Length: 83
Image 1 (cartoon, rainbow, N blue to C red):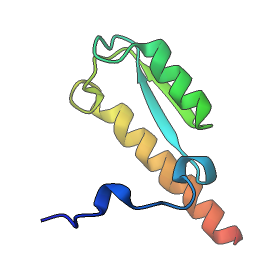
Image 2: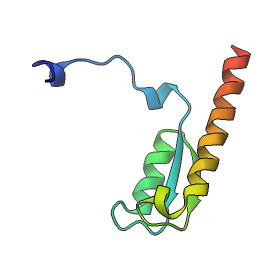
Image 3: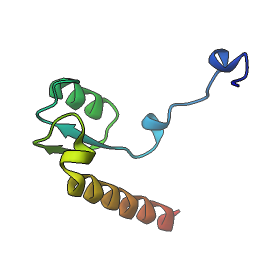
Image 4: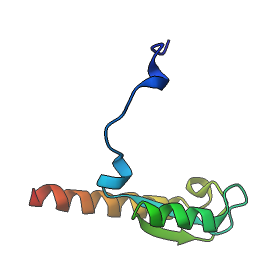
């Protein structure tokens, strides 16, 4: 059971503003418009990959998702090594 004040909690900072982000734009998405996805990715400063996919990229283009995750992991390892 969630704490009664769960939705009143104040959170300091926003992760996507201060941490590296990655985003996959599904160019054939009919659930979220691709232009909206591009806007969100740009606003968060995400490294963006576009693919000809529907909304469920992880099912229709799993290799693209795996590649993005691997590239993100490598990039974060590089940041951690330089810290």
